[in-house]
Image (cartoon, rainbow, N blue to C red; front, side, top):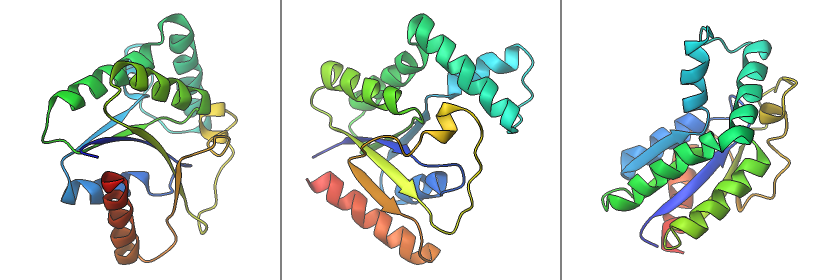
Length: 174
């Protein structure tokens, strides 16, 4: 496989961004979140960038409304996936999506629109992290999906980096 789109998910603080940074040290990567356009809209109407439970619920609810209205978050990441497909130097696109139904919807959309690039879902877990229940489905339903791969982020940072890059090597050679 020459390129791959990886839908990466996990509860807040499990290390998703750190792992994506490790990948970018070895591969040309694109890192996109389905919440990015929602955050831009939220700022226009007064959201201050906070991460409280109320802020997180507001963003999750706004994303659900936009998705229901015009599938805007999916259209945003699909456009980025098409850009990714057009640039041969890129090898991995990480797409951050929290909601299980949106993960499946994105995977199906890419299979239809860009059938030559596989999409793999990846759950990141971390045992030593105490997780908060936020009261919104985007944060609280992360584990309610059958992921293609699961990565346990429980070792030293050096070991985690080595193991994650090994996983990516395996995915790219499948």
